[in-house]
Length: 234
Length: 383
Image 1 (tube, each protein chain N blue to C red):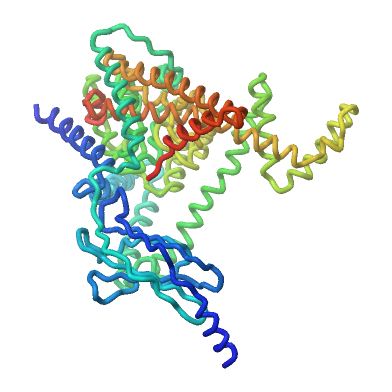
Image 2 (cartoon, rainbow over the protein chains, first blue to last red; image 1 turned 180 degrees about the vertical axis):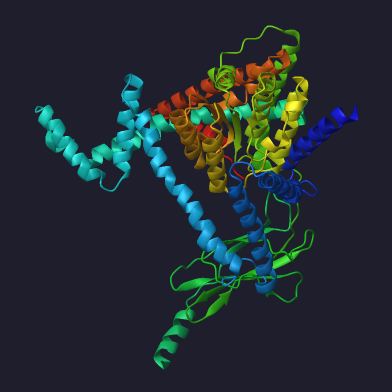
C-alpha cells in the first residue's frame, strides 16, 4: 500500500509546496525552489556513479567476451579511466583540472573540444541532405515551403543581395513587363523575408507554444493528482 | 596645472547635491533588500554616485559600491543587510574634481512579503485554467464516452514495430538529452512502456541509449515491468538500456555508432533534443529505418519533420498516455485543454480586434486603446 501511495503523496505534497512557494517570497517558501534544485543536483551527481557503472560494465563484458568490436570498447574504457586519472592527477598537482598547464586541460582542449566541433560540423552535411528531401517540389505545400525557405535563406546570407539582383534580372527576362528597378530593390525583398519570419512563422510557432503550455499544465495536473503514474512504473 | 585645479574647484562649487532621496523596502522579495532612488538636478560634469549606509544616527556610514554608478536608482541587497533593522542613507555625487553629499535620509526597514503581488496575474490564470481542468476531470468520471482525435504518430508505433520484427532488426528508443525533470521525458515513458511491451511480445531487441543516469534508471524499470507484464521477463537485458554520455555531441556520436552497427528497423526519438537531432535522425534515415519523433523543442521540429516518417507536433506527445490508455478521467484533461484553447482563441481574437479598433479610432474613442493597453500590460509578467 505504502509502496504505491507513498510516492504519490510525496509528489502531491512537493508540487503543492512549490506552487505555494512561487507566490510567497517570505521564508521558508522563498528559497524552496532553489533548495529543491540543490537536492536534485546532489542526487543526480551521485547517479553519475550509476552511469559510470552501466558504461564500464557494458564495455568490459564486451572486452572479456571478445564480442564484435571489442577493440573499440577497449579504447573507450582506456579513454574513460585515462581521463579520470589525468583529471585526478591535475586536481592534486595543479589544484584544478582546468588549470592552464594541467594535463587534463590539454586533453580537454586538444581532444574533447575538437571532437565535439567535428560532430557539430557534420550537421552542415546533414542539413543539406535533409533540405534536399524536404524541398523537393512534389505538391503545392512543398512548393510554398521551397519558396519560403529560399527567401529566408537568401535574406539571411551576406551575398543575398547580389544573388537577388541576378534572380530579379532572370525574372525580368522571363516576364519583360515587370519593372526591373522595383524588382531589384533589396530592401523590399528583405522586408518580405522579415514579414515571413515575424508573422506567419511566429504565428505558427506561438500556436504550437500555446498548445505545449496547455499540454504541460494538463500533464502536470495528471501527475500531481496521481492520475498519471507511468513515472512510477505502475 | 594650478589653473586646471582652480577651474575645477570653481566648477565643483556648482555641483548640486542629489535631491528627493527615496528609500523603500524592495517589494515582493524575500527581504534584506532596500530600493533607493534620487533625483539629480544636474547631469553635466558628474562622473557618478556612491551610496552610503549606516544603521544608527550618529553612526559610521559605509560605502556600498566600489565602482561609481551612473543611474539614479540602486538596489541595496548587501548580504550584511538585516530585516527589521532601521537604516540611514545618503548619496555622494562626484565630479572630476570634487564631491557633494545629499542630506541623510531614513530610517528605512526591509522586510519579506507574504505574497508576491507582481504574480497576481499568474495566480488568477492558474486558478481559471486549473479550475477548468478539474471541472472536466470531475465531469469525465460520469461521462465514459469521450472522443480523442487520431494521432498518426502514435498509431504508427505498431506499424514501425511490426516492420522491425519482420526484418528481424532491433528497435532503438532515445530520450535525447532530456532529464527526468523534463515533462517531455515523463510524457515519453508511457510510449516506451508500450513499445517495450510489444518488443517483448515479438521477441525483438529494444536498445535505449541514455544521456542521463536518472533517465536510464527510470527507463530500465519501465522496460523491465513491461517485459514482466508481457510474460517475457527472460528477454529483458539491462545492458540494452545503457548510459552513453551526457555530452551533447558525444551522445550523438554514440547513438550514430549504435545505429550504424546494429541497423535498427525502427527508431523512436521521443524526448528533449537540441542540435544533435538532425545528426541522429539523418543517420537513422540513411539506414532505411522507419522513424517516429516527438519533442517539445519547437526549434528541432522542422528537422524531425524533414528526416522522420512520423512526427508528433506540439502537445501530441503530452497526450500520448491518454491516447494509449484512453480512460475517461485521462481524456477529461484533454477535453479541458481543448476548451481552454477555444477560450484562448476567443480572447486573442477579441484583443486583436480591440487593438485594431483602438488604433483606428484613436481620436474618436481613446478608451479602446487604453483598454487594449491595460489588457496587454496585465498579461505581461512582472517578475
